[in-house]
Length: 129
Image (cartoon, rainbow, N blue to C red; front, side, top):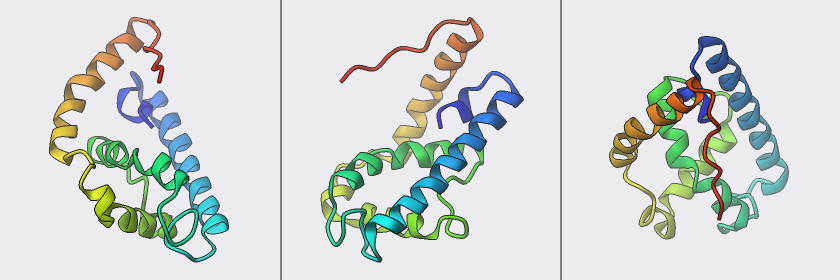
């Protein structure tokens, strides 16, 4: 997903966009299979998969704004779009999600650094948790 906004070439950006859209489509299918019509991946309540994917929603929206590429689309991924709305409106989630404008401002400093590393043929930092 990050490659959509940091790819140094148009070809690289297109490839990253295609990969991200394919990944989101796979998530749409997985959600349909796992949720069985319920609002969350595990059923009626937020579970592990919801948290694991949901913590990326801020960055997904940031990528959509920055690149103009709609990743979670009500027309193409309706179940996932509905899941995102349900997830984000939950009080346990809405109180801890990052502010969209602050995240966008932060990305304006972060993305150029990652792009510069790519252009210099340096490896992106490895994140260890």
